[in-house]
Length: 411
Ligand code: GLA
Image 1 (cartoon, rainbow, N blue to C red):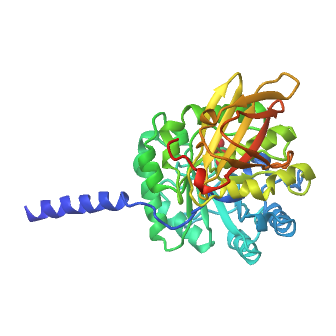
Image 2 (image 1 turned 180 degrees about the vertical axis):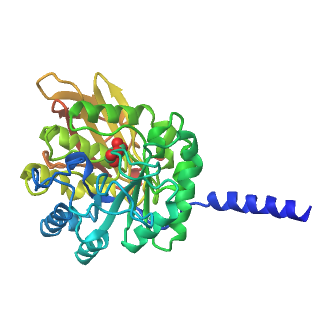
């Protein structure tokens, strides 16, 4: 009898402890940084593609530029290696081995380099027995691998979900998070858990992860970006409410500066991502990026929207004739409002909307154009708000209440 009770107690304690919130005090604003995948994928041939292969050299070069050209100062402080950093086999002790040619000094050397320059180190792994590209995954080696991450001074783990039984994720991801917590080294925990499930349990996911990839991989095109925006808008009621300091929905990496988006389209992504309180993870060759795209990534006012301390995710509040309004409430009582034009008729599209349509309280605002294409203007609720938006473009404004006296709390 006593043994049985003890057994029940142990099972109970184990369940309670797996159920502990991650609560690691990290990612109080959406993580910002740079990650290899979207631009550099799984390029491993350094002889053929010396400037593009996933390697220590790429990481160092990127970190140098991020420091020298103001990216770190703007807030992009994580530098991360996505898939394809490993040897295909573990060592004789069952430990992960970074590719010997591409990471000749191992991962601790990479971390040291980054830390000395003021960055944090992000690394990819997968909860299955293989990563999506077929390198060894953590399954059945969880403790050994977390020890390696600790030894290498990793600050952020992206844990993917290829080759995992999706039914096992609901226990597996919390279990891995618990082990991370017990490791004694604070590591941001990025989970791909919901991206692999049909009906994700967001209450549990947000309890156990700092950020989570909700859906499909982003590809380098306007159609992929539009699809992701649409999916996030159509499903926003399921998960937007779980975003808050320490826990974020992740619509995937920024495409800004690569091949597939025009400048207007890049501005759309930066605006909508900041309304979504999304992680801002660049994935671009910072050596060759064109200055106008760099300017988008370094737009301080837009970064400030993304990083707003209230941590409330914005919503798409209007969608008509292929035009959308996205609205995010900010900590100082202002609103970030993005007008997105998904139409392709070749002229800027004019819209005229009421304050109710924009879902903002009826008061007087100073309206600032966050891309600085227009002069600030003062607007009141008595007249509809008018703007014109380029085809596949955005107008992104901050509506700042002029005086707290005329705030109408009814809306
Ligand atoms: C999955 C992820 C991507 C990337 C690749 C790497 O597809 O969703 O973000 O990490 O795996 O193989």
